[in-house]
Amino acid sequence: MNDARPWPAMVAASALTLVCAVAAGVAASTAAAEFTRGPSPAELHAASRREVAERWRSWPAGRVFPATLPYSAEQGGVERASRVGISPRTDCAEAVDPEAVAALRAAGCLGVLRATYIDALRGVLVTVGVVALPDERAAARAKAVFPESGDPAPGVRPLAFHGTVADRFSPSVRQAGSVRQAGPYVVLTAAGQVDGRPARALAERRASIFAFAPEISESVLAGLSTPRLPDCAAREWAC
Image 1 (cartoon, one colour):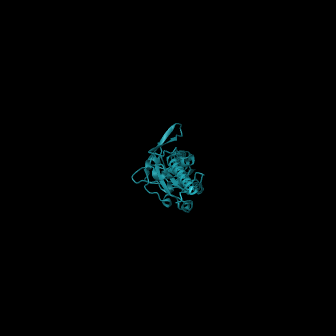
Image 2 (image 1 turned 90 degrees about the vertical axis):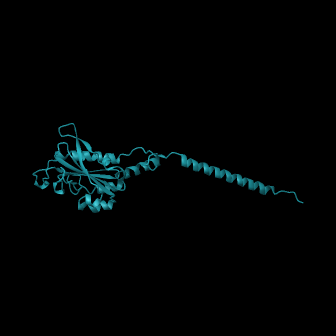
């Protein structure tokens, strides 16, 4: 009987088994580290961008459009514009003038949020419109459609509320407009007087009484577009 053992084969098999075990251990260790490590800076920035882009959908309407917004008074000091109402509709074509619809669609308009405010002296109405776009580049493209001269058209359509001080706030009443952009958002305003007088009936435009409109729009825009540090434990974040 031949008692010789195939040592080389056994050694090779043992070595291969050891290599496989080590490889499996490294893979398991790497996988465990991947699942347990914190998010990288790039992942945190990506999560922050996603959260900003979803605010128009994920935030309550009253957070997008606070009940009051501060602005600088003509006489000095700070006054507050009060919210009259918020539209439940977000259709892009319905919220802006027809001349701007095609350009917004081409830029990928996701929706337009609108709310109307009245100044502290209760003489001027302002509709603030938030246009949500897929990203900052699309928002910059959409902004170019609207005049930066203060002309109200093409722009956001005034939002009237029957039975309120904004009952007569129609497109013909608009006397001033503004456009601002940051991140994936464009914010528009349309301002006019509470008494419903048409802009064409005025001998001259009184730009100073509408100067607060861009200021309150900037407050809305800052709230929507300012990134904040992700909290990966919170449900609203996807890190």
